[in-house]
Amino acid sequence: GEDVEQSLFLSVREGDSSVINCTYTDSSSTYLYWYKQEPGAGLQLLTYIFSNMDMKQDQRLTVLLNKKDKHLSLRIADTQTGDSAIYFCAESIYGNNRLAFGKGNQVVVIP
Amino acid sequence: AAGVIQSPRHLIKEKRETATLKCYPIPRHDTVYWYQQGPGQDPQFLISFYEKMQSDKGSIPDRFSAQQFSDYHSELNMSSLELGDSALYFCASSLSASGRALDEQYFGPGTRLTVT
Image (cartoon, rainbow over all chains, first blue to last red):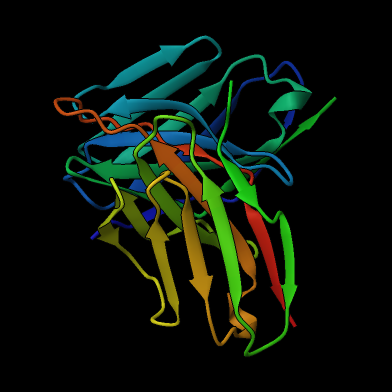
C-alpha cells in the first residue's frame, strides 16, 4: 500500500535555501506532489513530478525524485517569510486519484 | 477564480450527535474528494465521487456517509459523533479528463469539527 514518511521541523533564515525530504514505499506511484498548508487554510498544490522524471524546477522550487531510494525532496530557493507553513508530500497512482499524504514538515522562516 | 467552498467553516457538536458538512466544488469539476486531518496529523483520504457515483473509498467509518448531488455538490454526514472525530475535514475537487493521468485536486479551506 501507500506509505509516506517525512521529517517534521525546519528552521531557516530568510534568503537561505530550505530542503524538505520525504520517503515513500509504494513504487507504483504515478505522481508525487508537494502541498503547502498555511494556518487556517486549505492545502495548496505547489508542484508535482511525474514518476518517470528525476527533477523538476518551477521558479524557486526544485523537486528531486530518486526512485531507486523512493526519496522525494523539495528545495525552496531564497526562502521568504511567506514560505512559513507546513509542507506535505503526497503520492497518487494512475487510475486511483486518492492522495496519500506524508506526515508534514513545518518550515519556520526567520527574518 | 472560484474556489472550493466548504460550509460550515467551524462546527461544534456533542458526542453522539450528528453533523453534516457541505462541499461545493469548482464549477464544471465533476469529482469530489473528502479528507480528514486530525490534530497534528496528515490528511487521510475518506471517500470520493465522480459524476455522482462513489468512485473510491478509504478509511471512512461506517458511521459516516456521503453523497454527491446532481449539482455536483457533496455532503458528508457523520452520525454518533465521537471525540476522536474532532478534526479538519477537507473537500477537494477536480475535473477528470480521459487520457490525462493527472487530475489536479483543488482543496477547500476545510471545516473544523470539534466534538465535546
